Structures are given as structure tokens and as C-alpha cells.
Length: 106
Image (spheres, rainbow, N blue to C red):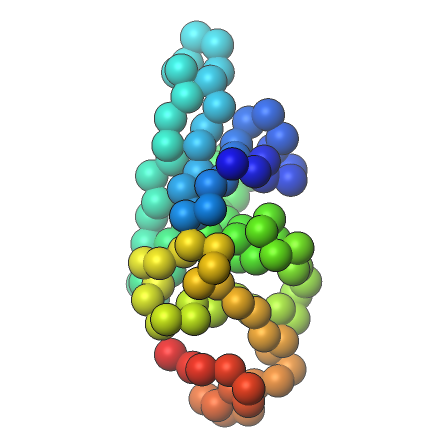
């Protein structure tokens, strides 16, 4: 489990992309956050400050990749598989139409 950068002590994420909410006095003893799914099939979580896509969290926390021009994708094309080994990135600027050079598209 690794801590979410802006929420150290509050939330952690495991290698499968599951997010743990650490115990909070008088609220709960620690719970796994429910993964929501958007219209395109991408998993995300909601916390007080907003919405975070699981595959983007995996890029940041397990691969150290972040930035506005970076997009994550699922290597096997399965948006339900957010394991860190199944998440890769590409730069938005590399995309031309629906073809991404050097990467599989889905």
C-alpha cells in the first residue's frame, strides 16, 4: 500500500488500484472506498476535494508519472484491470486522430 500524495495518513492505494480510507476516530475503523465507473468505463474514487481516476493515480503513485499532457491507458484494453503493471502512459501530443503511434489503442 502506498499513500496518496495529498492525503498521507488518510488514504492509501494498493497495487490493484483499490483505495483504503484509514481509520477516522468516531467515524469508521478503516474502509475500502467504492470504485465508481464513468460513462466511458473508467474507474474513479470521490473524496472531499474531488474525483480521482484510478488509472491516473496508478501512474502517479507506482510509476511516478504526472502532468497535464500525460494520459494513462490500460495495456490489455480492460478498463476494469487497474493493476499497476497494466497501466502505461503516453503524451497527448503524440496522438493523431484515433491512432497513437508506438502504443496500442482502445
